Structures are given as structure tokens and as C-alpha cells.
Image (tube, rainbow, N blue to C red):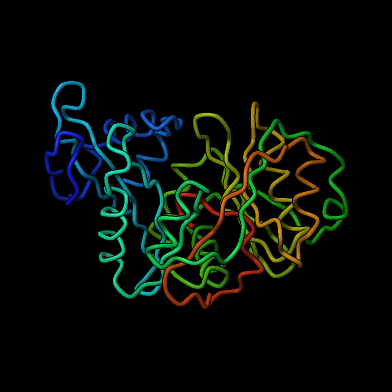
Length: 300
């Protein structure tokens, strides 16, 4: 295990739980991130969070020196997010130690993550490779004409209301994602401000959620049979939002080139690009064309 600036070894990596919520929030603030208390609470309950306690006393007493979150989707897929090291403990190998630990925990699963330019070199050294880009769009959503979907009586959105809707959501999601995300999605009714399903002539064929983060309402996940349906879901979620909306999309998909420009036309400005990376064989088993946004960039 690396040592801190005084040469004191860091404590071993330990599993974090809901009782560590305040420490995780403080770690986010330390690195200049938003506190993201609601997202941390979800991750500490639905995923596997790991952390290292700060060995120094004084203002570091009881604090985390670093943390990372692993979310499993069955035996073959997992994601890593919220990889953070406190500013005063940076550049001492702690980030690498946390990532090495979490990759060992993941075993043979393919692991994906959203990498900033700052974190990308570390992930490349650990064997991750870039598989696509992710573009973030934020701003107050400006509703416009609903377009062809509003005139199609066989395509409409409505709130998810019962267990039958959740069963349909899980079925649609597994076909698209290719693995079981029920441990996350079944928490959406309590976690999200809005949860919509898309109905067509074939029944429920898509869904989307909007949940409030510190600085914006995040639209995600969005799972839909095509671009028109995805835009309908996004617009119906974003239109009633007061304040900023956040949308994370792949800007390079040949089958949906209109989505970034559509976001801009509706008032969402480009605010950053990250790289989605994978460790291990990445042969997505699901219908990836139906995945439009993630739950969160902490859940690749």
C-alpha cells in the first residue's frame, strides 16, 4: 500500500457502506466535485463501494483518502465509477491501488468506465482501452414542436405506475443492455423524480428516468427502440424540469447523428467530453442501438 506525505502507510482498502455517506460526500467536495449526496446514497446501497481511510490526524481525521465504486451486472459485466483521491493524498499511488483492488474484485468480468482526460493515462496503464466517446449537454431545456411522434397514436409516454410496468422495464432493459440491471432499476421509482414508459402497438418498448443531482436533473437511463422514441421520452421528461437538464450521449453513433444537434436546438449546450473505456473483452450481448443514455456516468 502507498504511503502518505509523512511516510505513513495508508490503511488497507475496505468496503464502504451507507454509514460512510458523509465521508464520500466530503471526498467529492475535496476534489471540487458537487457533493452528489443522492447519487452516493444510491451507489452505497446498490453497488460495491471501496475506500481507504486517511491515516493523518487533524483535519483528515475520520476522512477518506480515496474511494471507488464497482457495480456488477451479472458475472460477465461490471462498471467502475466515482474514483476519487483526496487532493492532499494525490500522486502517491493510491488511485492505482484502488483500481487494482477493484479490478481484482471484478474477476473475469469486462469492466467499463467513463474516463476524464486526467484519469485516462492511469486507466490505460492498467489495461483499459477506449471504446467510444461520451458527450455531456447541459442547460435549461427549451421545449419545441413535438414532431412526428406526437401524431403517432401508436407511440406515447406515460408514468410507470405498477409492478407490471417494472416487469416490462426489466425485460426491455435486459434485451438492450444484455445483462441484469434489476438491482439498480427497481430503485428508480423511489430514486427518480420521473419514470416514464414508452408504449407502442407492441406494448411497452422503452423507458426513461429523470433524477435530480446537485446542479441539474439528469435524464437517464433512456432505452428506446429508435431515435424518434428516445427524443420523445427525453422531451417529455425534460419539459417540466425547472432549472438545468443534463444529457449524456454518444456523439459519434452513425445510427443517431441527429441527437447531439437536437439537444443543442433545445437549449442544451455541450459541456464536456469523456472517454468510455473497457478492461477485458467487450462484446456487448444486448441490442446496443437501443441504449441512448446511461443511468449515470458513474454506472457505465
